[in-house]
Image (cartoon, rainbow, N blue to C red):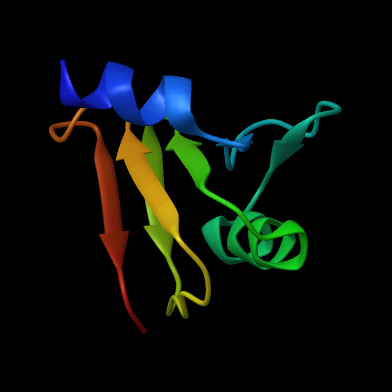
Length: 77
């Protein structure tokens, strides 16, 4: 229920998929965060299945939602 409330209140939505090079997706979480920061407002970043090794810096009001905690792994370097 909480994710639905966040999703409906979001100004912008971003999709991160490190296995896709398709239009409208980001290969890194930080690149999606950077774009979300540039537009401001309340933003949601959806992270698709995968392993993401990156250090993250958050700036604005950003909600990060993984597709499933058992198949999304985020580790810093």
